[in-house]
Image (cartoon, rainbow, N blue to C red; front, side):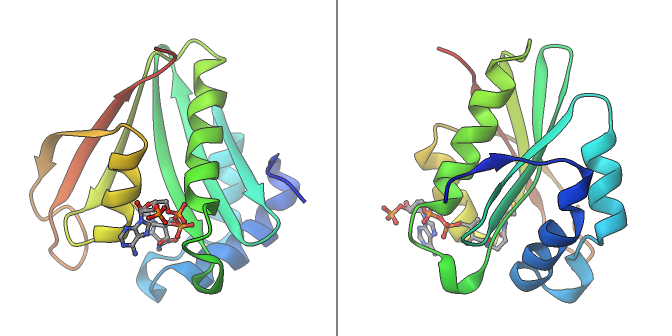
Amino acid sequence: MSIRPVTAAHAEALAAIHQAAFPPDEVWSATVISLHVGLPGGFGFIDPRGGMVLARTVMDEAEILTLAVLPEARRQGLGRDLLQAAMRGAAETDARTMFLEVAEENTAARALYARCGFTEIGRRKRYYANGDDALVMRVALGT
Ligand SMILES: CC(C)(COP(=O)(O)OP(=O)(O)OC[C@H]1O[C@@H](n2cnc3c(N)ncnc32)[C@H](O)[C@@H]1OP(=O)(O)O)[C@@H](O)C(=O)NCCC(=O)NCCS
């Protein structure tokens, strides 16, 4: 079973993965997920083994909105495959750059993003509800 593009019809499956991957106060409901998939430029991918990514392209810039892998499916390459699928998907549109925000404390996600070529370009102080700073990261697409 391989990664496939999502539609709003996948919202419940995506929400189940999100709920298992994030703490309760960071979980996105199926309604929120389906709204994001339906935004202009919104797109995403699901890995049936237990991973999901949502992203959005506006003009020549893309953004990772959320990325989640089930705890029991981690360290098997799903996160990297999903992120790279989103990078390819964005590059196939007009996007030339991709951005994301990640909590400074999230060492797993930061390591994954660095492995995929993202570099830190800024910091948003106390961005998250728990007071953590967000790091803003960027990668050039299609180079
Ligand atoms: C971050 C997350 C998506 C990574 O998914 P994953 O499927 O485990 O990642 P991968 O197996 O593809 O890892 C790819 C690389 O990222 C790095 N990495 C991933 N998890 C890591 C960890 N816990 N510690 C250190 N490096 C890690 C490694 O370099 C890894 O390559 P390797 O396994 O060959 O060493 C997953 O941990 C997750 O869902 N976390 C909770 C939700 C979250 O934080 N989402 C991101 C919000 S910004």
